[in-house]
Image (cartoon, rainbow, N blue to C red):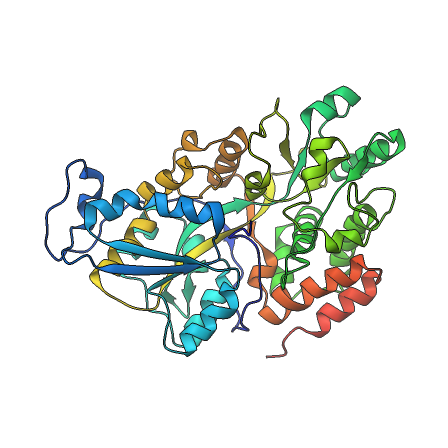
Length: 451
């Protein structure tokens, strides 16, 4: 199954400001309807209006398979109560095809963008419409100003936030850890020590990993680097790295590469169940964690959304088959620092029914409806964490809603596309295949746009 968070090829874009996040949420009103009478039991949807003539709103995104089914469930009551039919289409080629469709004059009504940069490129091409006032009001009321800025280009607001993810989880088997006396590391040095001990014990490889993702192969490795940069160098350096004020060749960045390389380029530490170090590039990120269930590997680094990849019946809990702990800080007692991602909803067309759908998708009502179905979380402040379907999802929502969390949006999603979704991905693949840190960071830096 392809995930909505699967980063893929995106179109080059103008520069995008780098912003820290303090995460919140929303609820709100909708535009006047075009007439009609709401069905019984539709009180929650009354503000969105009722529409006659069965108008249709099309939505296009990267979200496929089970998650696509859950999206359709999340607006089923909205459709019944408003009279609007939502025609959803998910595609693994979204990032390429959205540009083709926009240029060809055949865009969807709405698109769910997995990267702020892709939304900005559509704005730069003159394809997207400014968000309607009802959506802007929702975001102003219930989301942080930083989240709104990710959907703002040139001072105009285009895209409301939708779902979110917490990256930097290290997935493991609680039973395997407890039976072998392993404890959750509290610092990056302790993670090193734990890795070495697991390898020395010889009961499993410490790590399994998978960077294969079609045209986007390599992105799971960029997430590794980003997590370590944020923890080792701190948020200020992280922000400057995204804007090229700190180069890929800077010692603070190469230090992060070398830290990750200690795990992923060491044949004694990877790649359990799949092969040698280079098998990291041929193993899909979806399959990467599965050897944990067979006690072939002890740990796998991946975001909160990986929960949807475990086989049906897998218990995700501290006393379950698998669980996750956040990559620890560089120093004991350090501030909680996480990277993450999310989606933005933008419109290619305008109408009352499109505005009603946009407004619903920016509401706490939608967030709660969707999260109840499982597999995703949101940074929406109006989201009740109790609606999450697992302890890890509840934990992730609380992290996102905690004002003391140091949160940064995925760096590669904010870098120019020539780097963030091109040379950074390719460089990571070459790095796993044997290129040195210096060779790879020199290559990535050389691709940074000069204008």
